[in-house]
Image (cartoon, rainbow, N blue to C red):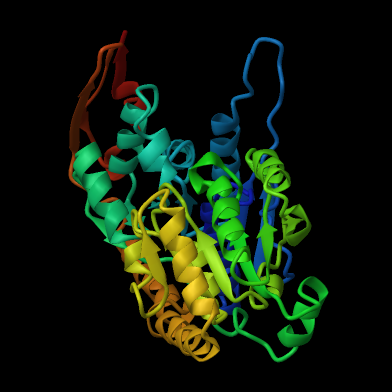
Amino acid sequence: MKIGITCYPTYGGSGVVATELGLELAQRGHEVHFISYAQPIRLIQTSPNIHYHEVEVSRYPLFEYPPYDLALATRMAEVSELYELDLLHVHYAIPHSVSALLARQMLAAGPKKRKLPFVTTLHGTDITLVGQDRSYLPITRFSIEQSDGVTAISQYLRERTLREFDVKNNIEVIYNFVNCDIYTRRQDFAEARKEYAPNGERILMHVSNFRPVKRITDVIEIFDRVRKQIPAKLLLLGDGPDRSPAEWLAVQKGIHNDVIFLGKREQVYEKLGIADILLLPSELESFGLAALEAMACEVVPIATDVGGVPEVIEHGKSGYLAKIGDVETMARYAIEILSDESRLRKMGKECRDAARARFCTSKIIPQYEEFWQNWKTKPHQRASTVMAVNGHAGSFAVENFEPLGDIGNSDSALAQASWTL
């Protein structure tokens, strides 16, 4: 198949999953076209089946903010037409689904009357944060409703989307995945540990984009408690707005010499496998990709019992779960497991076994292929949608929306959308 993938090219879960998905598909013989404003951070492998198309946004004095969504829609349509794509797969609903919808309509109204389906994968904050903003809720619901297919990365996210957005689409759960051949504990990791723990200290790790939802200061608090009981080092991979508060807290507690900020790393697996424990004290995770990647490397995750995390980690078997902000309990779990080498290694093996059994690429990628094939062979079979969203500031209504197959003139979906403020 020829697949167009659009994602945020940043150091976050949705972009990482989309990029890894494209790389896996290319290895399976699919032709993959990434369409974004910058090259995705993990898109460093070269393959004749991988193509990258940059979206350039012109800046005019008239526009206070550059219209990226319109430029993206145009680029999607151009790439789809030129390379004869079979479908578009967009990750993160806003604005990618809206841009894909516009691209689909542009192609349908063009001289070839092409019918190009698009699939949306929901990743979390596009639903839990952005989508519930009064300014974005109507358009988020609209974009989900008009997607030819919708997937969510966890059962938790699926149920929350259906409940809070009241969408009529069927949403299929396809979990995030990990390449178990790449994410593994290699023999040379023992030597690599000496760079950061020359005296045999335990290594705790955290991987994220350092946003407030990740609760980076909780990571410092947990490590401070662990370090009082066990010689240890803390490695932090990533960067973001909460790095400075974390650095300041480490200095205030006098542990800054044992806290190492490694910054953004494209190949996380090169460092992840040297750790003993991964700390993930997030306020919310729709899946917990960092925990899964750690599990594949036989690194025991200690995370919060929120969102989709319990679908990944089985408490007491493939990691530990605690309440949000309960740094005492998370520190206790860490101290207990780090104090028992046999137990630590046994749980590490169980973590990898769990990852291999449920989340390896060999399990998940075929689910995407089957899902796409359904929309390639039978596109645009959705029923007409009637939707109304009312709020204090105004209302958004879409009435009698016709499937794309019936659109061949100016009476497009967007022409039928009306805002009343």
